[in-house]
Amino acid sequence: MYVEQAILEEKYKCYGHFYSIVLDHHKFPCRSVLEIINNSIDYLHPNDFLKHPPELIAIMMNPGASRPKGDDPQTDVPVESINNMEITLTPTIPDRTQFQIMRLMEAKNWTHSRILNLSDLRDPESGRFYGYFETVQSILGGDYHTIFSNFRKKELFEKLKQPTLILAAWGVSDNLDPLIKKCVDRIKNENLIGVKKSGPNDRYYHPLLQGTPFNQKEWLEKCIKFF
Image (cartoon, rainbow, N blue to C red):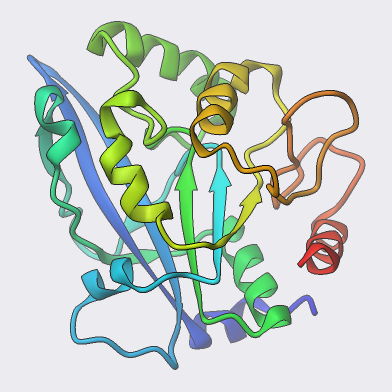
């Protein structure tokens, strides 16, 4: 069940869309989506994966330190154009979180998963991120950095239009409540699946489970039983 990383690297590839939200002299690096693909799926162009309904959509906190292979091809997207930005996928270096999703795919024989985030902002420090997204919203004058924003309803519809299992794995911090509410209100999915923290809330443990009573293997075991 807990497949080694080296094996997963041989069996799966990741493709992401990288861009920067721009307003005046401000620029904020982002990633809007990540596709995890088994090598058995073969298309002429990576963008074709966006048209293919995945077996799983996982919603996490933010892309963290995610980065493309080679040069960063991110495009500058002015705030006023965010609802019409063009999505172009590029090969992406997977991180430990994505390897956890690959292990879940291995256990369920899935070939395609899609990762969305509560926020597109690329910031690897979760402690800093909690204040960072509020600062960015203040500078931009809106929540353009999240696909669950009113500004990006069309883009979200395109990524969720096929009936798909949705795994909630965005973490359990109180600081995420404003973003979690936007997400839950937007998708209105009563069958959201994940390792839920006890209590009347929508907090679901992250696949790496830092600072929790579980470990990564326990998270994986629980998720496999859910699906």
